[in-house]
Length: 201
Image (tube, rainbow, N blue to C red):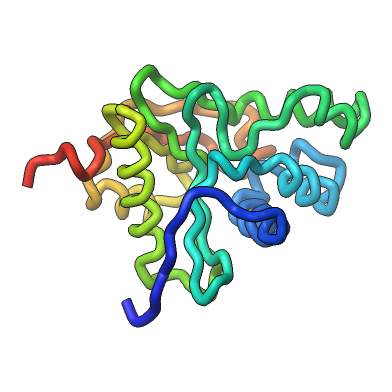
């Protein structure tokens, strides 16, 4: 790697728009059905991101990668119902709730579930994703969690192959059935591994 990457927990309010923008662009296809139009979706996602559930990668002070974590019943994007109704109105909040519910994954006991990993397009292929995964391992170890889990959709086989090479193994799958056309993928596979500190050399 030919650049210095700083990995840390959380983000400042000045960085919120950047973090939300990266998250929205990476996951827009499956999140957009929850919103009447893209601008509203991006704005809502950005406002609802939780700094205490986001690991950020920075290059020269600019956020270039994000890894959300789901722990203690809260995830990176985890708005309250009152926040949804305030920002989207009653009808919009119901739409968002109905559209987002099929995407929700409950974290198994003792497992850190990753709420999505994304890297800015102009910084991909430079190992930032790997550094974020290592930071997630460290987070899991600090909080006494026994495994790290993520999910990958069936339209992204390259990502699944990459995670498998890095020690993740399948532990389950879920199908969207007739909803696949709405979200842009048909099924997802849950992959899990022990944190780096607990794996045999």
